[in-house]
Amino acid sequence: MKRCVIVGGADIRNYDAAAGLLKPDDYVIFCDSGLKHMEKLGVKPGLIVGDFDSHENPKLPVETVVLPCIKDDTDSVFAAKEAVRRGFDEFLFLGVIGGRLDHTIGNVSVLLKLHSLGKKALIADDYGLMQVIGAEGAEIDDTCRFFSLLNIDGTAKHINVTGAKYPVTDGEITTEYQYGISNEVLPGQTARVTVGEGRLLLIEIRQE
Image (cartoon, rainbow, N blue to C red):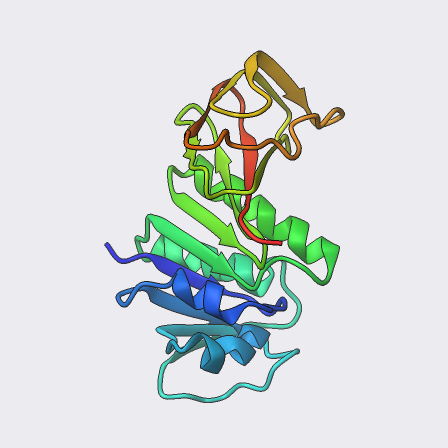
């Protein structure tokens, strides 16, 4: 199954890095003002969705879903739900972080929903990558400059981090005390993170 790439309207400063994450067979959904990134990303939409309150409907010869302005779902949330409905299991989000904090937090929460559905999902911004991890854990190579583990989903327990400057053994991170910020992978090693209970947001900072 192809990967679904969802492009939102937040700023993208490093188009080379963003375009470098794309694959030739990605299915790309542009959300409303995310269309401003189409030319610089060098990809064509498989689907366009939006209420077109922040970008004119380009009326391209591709499938377009025009949404009402008054609705519960943001354009990017609708796009994610529609992609799930169409059977996609892997997601990459571009242009969904930055600008309005409310939209940023809302888009990060989509990672939680997709994780709950057993989907693989990443958000990429100008600094790096973020994903939600649970019992499956994660590995981070030493090309990552910093990585942070944040709790946005209650309490995470029995956390173990190895191969890092600040190792963790049977740790616990709550939403009230976020001590897992700015860890570093040891040179020549691969950091490994496991979460025995709960979930964490893993943010990899790969450029500043």
